[in-house]
Length: 112
Length: 116
Image 1 (cartoon, rainbow over the protein chains, first blue to last red):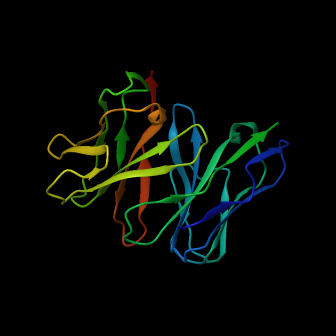
Image 2: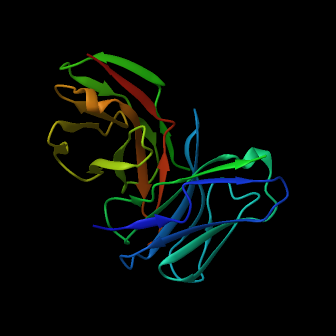
C-alpha cells in the first residue's frame, strides 16, 4: 500500500511564525497536492506539484508557498502564519493517469 | 473552471436503508473522472469509487454504486443496506486531465449519520 506521511498530526503556532508542513510519500508518484479542509467548504487545493522543482498554484495559494526538492517530499510553507490559516491540512499523491488519490492522515494546525 | 456541488450538508438515515448522496458537476472538458471519498471521524480520506466520463456502465464497488447521469451532469453515490460504520463525511470530487498536471476538485461534503 502507498504510504503518505505528514510530519505532525497536531501543530500549534503563533501569529507571524514561519511554519513548515512536511509530506513524504514512498511510491515514487509524480503528482503531489496540498489541500486545506474547513467545515462547510470541503477540501480546497492550495498548491500541487507534478515533478521535482515544479509547482502550480491551486485555488487558494495566497499566504502559502511550497517546495519540492526531491520527488518523495512536498513541503507547504506558511511564511507568516495568520489566524485564518487555522485549518486541517491534507497532503495527497497520485501517479499520472491513476484513478485515485492517496492521502496522508492530515495536520490540524492552530494559529494563535 | 470545474465545479462540484453537493447540496446536502447533512443526512440522517435508518440503519439498513439505502442512501443516495447527491453530487452534480460542471466542466466543459469531455474527458473527466468522478470520485467519491469517505472521511470518518478519524480524519483519514478513504477512496470509495471512481467513474470515468467515457465509461458505459455505472461503477460499483461492493455496497457502493455510482449513479452516473452524464446529460444531467450528476454522479450520485448510492450505499445499499447502510451500516453504522457508514457514518462519516462523504466528498464527491472530479479530475480533469491537464497534460499530466491533473488535480482533483472537491465538493463541500455531506455528513451522513446512520441511526440504529
